[in-house]
View 1 (tube, helix red, strand yellow):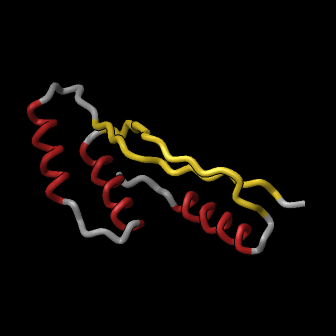
View 2: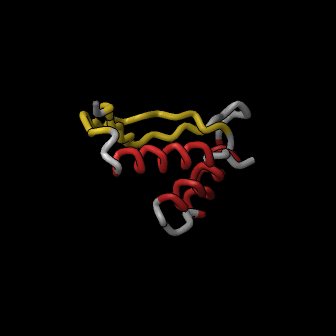
View 3: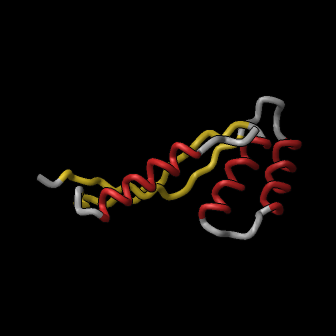
Length: 95
């Protein structure tokens, strides 16, 4: 099962267009660590593939293999949690 991020991509594009047209100004930028529950191996694979496509990165099948091995060693209820930096930008509408 692959997570559908098409709405997220459309929203990002709309925001970039509005900022480019001068409708909003950038007011705040912050970056912080975020933990996200991804679920099992198939959802992790889908999340990682989406991340690689957005960032134009090579596939990370080695990482999927490593997570799969860890899940095999863990309990049946083991879940995948990812952690990484989240970039947040706050915009203010121009009058």
